[in-house]
Image (cartoon, rainbow, N blue to C red):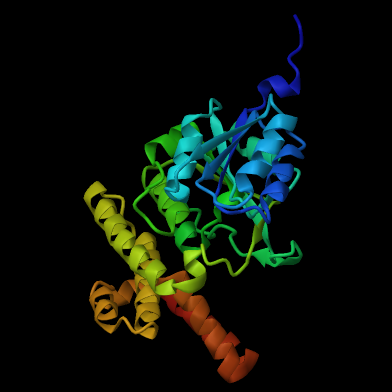
Length: 325
């Protein structure tokens, strides 16, 4: 019997790169996908109506790597629509969506494949922040919550798009919402978690996420827009969890702490009426049980009272929890 090579058993992963006016970074992004230790099955670049040199640069890579790189051009419809167009043109069972200003690290696809072989539907790893010049700024916090609940982990700190890969089944069941102006990857991931798709975190670095002051990035210039969208979606998630009977105390705590945080952001941005409306939906008892709230209290106590008082408060809380248990 002929032996199968390791490559024959390795999942095939397509890379989709949506781009709009990204001429400054797109070559680095495409090169990072081409430099993988486990080559992608294909690289699909979706030019979303760029008016700079992005399309020309992408076409150059397609000419140099005709068997691997393809370019799709469309009028400007936004990143979710570009990702969806790229997905529709791929053929692999797994897909990595890479933002046009980010970079995959060389072992990224190999690390994703490790998780997929073990049965994951969504695989993700760690990521570094880099500046506009590509210099590393430090790690991005996105390790999962110790509860093991993917829904809760996403509300603690969700992984960014480039550090995640999806099975076709998961992203087809929870497609990109083209109506959202921001927070699209968070929305996709949360819906995947609600539907019970399997998440796997690999504690290795897979991506570099560029932090830069581009006018095209909504989160750079209008955090109030992000909070408005997030609150609308969170209330939808709550409704779905309640109706499906999958709301748990720990999920409720994570969800309501997020609502409280966004209501504060809205108030700071001057959207007082909307902040009050959101705050009315907050369950205060659920917030008090949230892990992020407890961590915030610990940090505040340490800041004000020093490590001795912080340790006493922590021990008291654990004693109360043990007595209730």
